[in-house]
Amino acid sequence: MAERVDPHSLTISALCYRCARESENFFQRKAHDPRFCFELFRRAAMQHDQQAWDCLYKQYQPLVTGWVERHSLFHASGEEMDYFVNWAFEKMWSILTPEKFAKFPDLKSILRYLQMCVHSVLVDFMRAREKAFLIEDEPEGMGDPPAPKADEPEQAALGRMALDAFWEMLGGKLKNEKEQRVIYGSFVLALKPGELVGQYPGVFKNVKEVYQVKENVLARLGRDAEVREFLGNL
Image 1 (cartoon, rainbow, N blue to C red):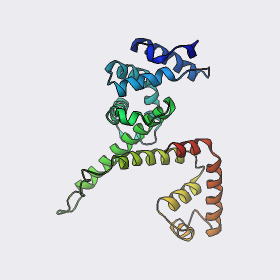
Image 2: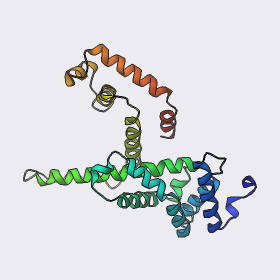
Image 3: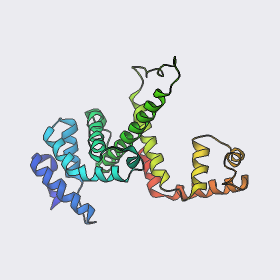
Image 4: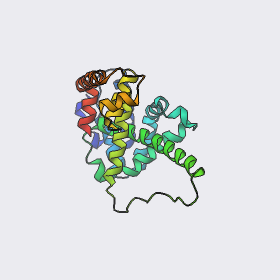
């Protein structure tokens, strides 16, 4: 009967109940209706409804906790789990304005964005800590890098979050050190195959092997549904 219920007609309490119920169905691989959780996000973002935000935090806190715990940077951070969970939610709340929300077509896209916020806060934390270490050893007379311009497009920050999340996801799909070196070296360091052989002499036999590894990885990733979907969302 879920299809006959208009989420817009429900109270926040009723939406919270239906969102929790449909989420449970989803995780149990049963038929589910994402409209109720999406409506909670809509009211939270468009109407600044604090009760909706509170319900969403309660509903998705376990999911965000799992994302933090499984993130490759978490255990190296030395911080408490809740620190990053709360930071990820705060980051999303601060960015998810009514104008931004209008660009999300469904619940799946919003949750992917929330997962990007998890990745972003962990990366920001590690970068800040690394910068602090560097400042301690910084030669006298060297100042901080220029601050971003006030009118710098906000999309640049969002684009960096998306790119960081993409590389995090991609790393889990590379099978071995050779694939990691080829993809990172080719697309991040902009190294040519011959330069890759010279850079990692104990990894690659010759240029031909670099070409073969690169071709195989790109072909496999091109068939990967998650990669295609992620690029489509970007």
